[in-house]
Length: 334
Image (cartoon, rainbow, N blue to C red; front, side, top):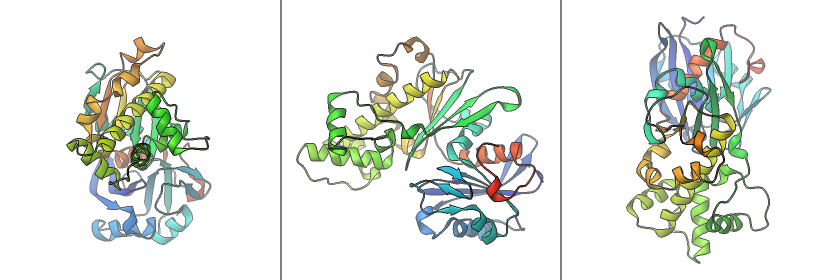
């Protein structure tokens, strides 16, 4: 089965990246690759069908999905997805024999065995690739994170729901923004600050604190205004986003002893790389921690999400998916 081309798809809240893959002597080979806007399709099956109709010349019977969210029986559950994903329906709609599923950031961690580890821009810490557990973290529509632990046969990967951990304000301004976002108190996850929608929410909160009406309506507009320094609340919102990402990343680096480095993934971060580099990210990554000496030795890189998700999903599939099973029986942790 591993010599037969198969579909590999990386499905997030905004984009669906789809490739036709097959095994090669050095891992996986990409035969075709496209990026789709999820909102342009009424269902995942239609998005995949568009790829098959345009790029696949022979029948394809096997598919691996890297999806934001958790696999619960026959369904992938995540509020950030554009539509519900039911595996049996997907398999039947496309005439597939096998649909395997893993978490999207789990797939990115498997991509560390490929080019992902070499593609990044250095942000802070030692400018060298080191050994040990490595983290992949990415704010996009949500906030994902996974850890790659080296070992025999490529080691193993752990998916997490770390983005759902409680946001911990660091500064007085953080507390003011948090109070504006949750005036009655209660649970606010890091994802509600450190993500595209979180950036927009922080911007709206800052405008409210200044008694101003928000002028900008999308995360892209906010980052553009922050780069141009044309909107004071946009500049401050990006600063809060970057510093909060530093705190979140430092927390996970301590929790997993990530001596193999941290890879911050996604086009969103790449687009604000210079702002991120000038921000308080590194200070908050290191600040006030008993593990500061350890954290000083951890390199942090920013890398494009790009095709790495489908590459990692394909690598996972070739390692774990050689025996087809019914779709509902397949999950992210074999």
